Structure formats: C-alpha cells, structure tokens
Amino acid sequence: MAAVCVTIAASHTNPAICIMEDHQETAHLPPLILFVGLILVLGCGIWSGLLFFVYKGSIIYGVIASVCVGATYAFLKQIKAQFFAGKPSKE
Image (cartoon, rainbow, N blue to C red; front, side):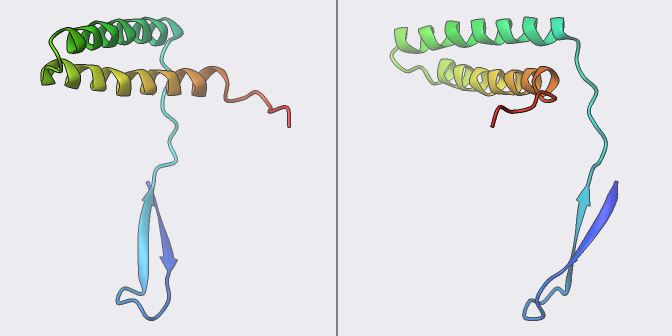
C-alpha cells in the first residue's frame, strides 16, 4: 500500500491528509463460478421476492431479496470488469 499525502488549505486544522491507496489488482474468478453464482443469486432473489409478496411483506424475505439484489449487482460488476473492460467505446 502506498500513502498519498495531499496538502489542503491553511484554514483547516490538519495541514496534510494522507490517503491510503491499494494498487493491487484483484484476481479474476473463473467464468463458470461467476455465471453459476449469478444464476443462484437470481434464483434465490426471485424465490424470496415471491415469498415476500405471498406472506404480505414478511421482513425476513424482504431482507433476503434485498441482499440478493446486492449480490446480483456485485456479480454483474465482476462479469463486466472481466469480460467487457478492455473493449473500446464507439464514441
């Protein structure tokens, strides 16, 4: 980890703020794990979402569905970073 120090205006009490930055790249997961995980999380989210509506807003199923939405976002972000990051835009 490398420390980057930024000098701020003299009106502040702290003349320098050091921010830690991590320049290490994360290891790519195998595509099979990404796609199987995405399918499982989507299935769990659909299941818990349906039960959320069946039981008229049970908080447990709502929490499970919301966690699945977050996990789906994380899987899609990993898939995008791994497969579509190096392609140039058409602008």
